[in-house]
Image (cartoon, rainbow, N blue to C red):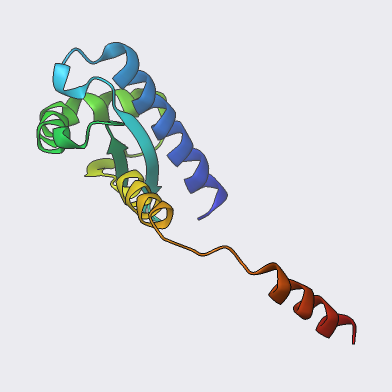
Length: 129
């Protein structure tokens, strides 16, 4: 991404995080985290990835609440980000954390035998030979 797109994406992420923390009264949108913002090259569309940490079951109600609040959120972003056109906001549920947790559980559940100390000594001798 270009420097300008990165800067605008960071601004949008900060603005939305503040709005979710302080200004949104809809209980469906409480406790949301903006995990990533990606903007197209023309700065017309912003893909916003959100997550309700620790509560994956709220996905449908959160996305519905975001759909209803989209106009308000876009207007507030437009007030703070000074661009010719305010980007259209597209909200997506970010399930990256859920995938990472599942992978961590799989890795921790693996039965990996301890290496044999005699085999390690033989390998060291081969390196210096």
